[in-house]
Image (tube, rainbow, N blue to C red):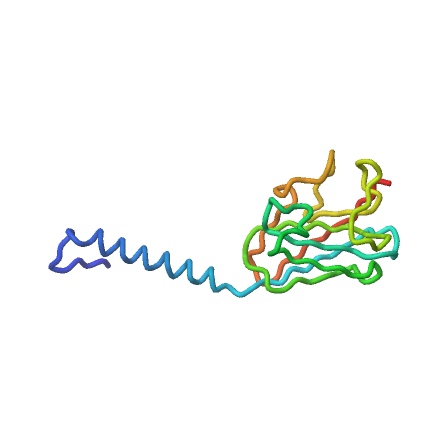
Length: 158
C-alpha cells in the first residue's frame, strides 16, 4: 500500500522521479560492472591442415570484416591443425562480429585471384555470401551472458 504523508501529492511526483532515477542508475551501474564474458569460436570445414587460421572479433562495424586496424579488436592466429576451437576472454557485453581466414600459405593475409578469395573464409552466424563480404549486421551477434559460442563453417571459392 502506498502512503503519502502530510506532504500530500505535491511532492509525490518528485519522490517517484527520484526513486525511478535511482533505480535506473543502479541498473546502469550493474550493467557496467557485469563480469566480462568468454566467447568460444568453433571452426569447421577447413580443406587442409596447412598454414594458419586468423580469427578477428570486433564490435565496431567500421572495422569489419578486416578488423586488424581496430585497436579494441580481439585477434588470434593459430596453426590450422589446432583451429577447431578458440576462446576469447574478457569481452564486455555488446554486439560483435567475427571474421575468419584460412591463411594456407602463412603470409598473414587473404590472397585474392582478381576479386575472388583464393583462401578460405568464414563469418559469425554463417551469412550467405553474394558479392563480397557480408555487412556487420549480417554477422553480428550479442554477448549478453558469461559464455557465448559461435560456430563458423569455412567457405572456399577456388
